[in-house]
Length: 337
Image (cartoon, rainbow, N blue to C red; front, side):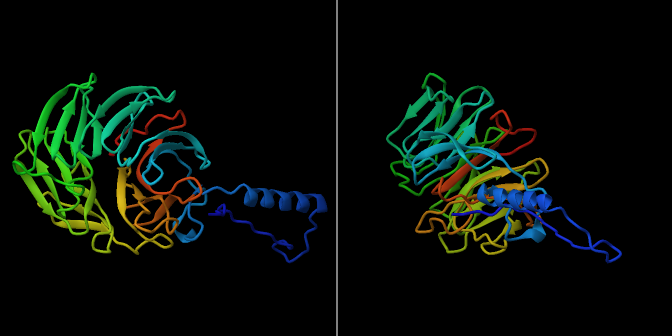
């Protein structure tokens, strides 16, 4: 999909007194060549030119790591929107860039940690589908098994340190029981029950602490610093959205399907919350939606578009994203992922 660089070019042939200003031919030629060069080298990692009223004069550019679910790979994209690195990862749905630069991600029925040399440093395999993973402060890895309903903590050597089952005894969750899940600072677990239209918080023993009904198929969850919960919802009811609920489940903010100029929400998946409150969101384009909207974008809380990525020639369907600094390390400083 071709992209257009955001630019503002003003050409005048008179000064403020109405006198003609002579512009040397060589200068005009150089200006023309410069504009042509900008057009020919345009990239999709840009601020959206379709909505100039919402953008600053200097478009933001980010390098980022992401999952490409339909292509079965994890990728690193440069600030110029080019593919820098990739690694096979079937059904990749959750991804982290660790402080050392390694990537942690799910692989359909497993989880891997891989360095930039593509060496596998951690691997866990299961008979259950897995859509959630998280590196814990103690070095263990949290894993949410969808089919089995197990919430696991796995040591670096692959030993299961802790296992909690959140399904009724003798039942299986199937393909849709859970998607994204996180272990919280208080030791509880926050789980998006995709097929059940609800988000649940479980204590360290697997007992339900809180339960929020959320229509549309909740896919990803983040517990905010104010004890609110940010939830990305899929396309189950035809109304994909992102909602923020308070501590008792009341919706206090939401982004609906068609609120952003030039961007239609298709199936909301990965999220990051920036220290300034802005949201970086991924818009999964599966279910016959390839190429129909932006893959990812940043917005302010008053729903102004700051940045987007919509290069469909490189990625098919993005389901998770993590912004990187100029050294390819994760952007922290209060970033929630």
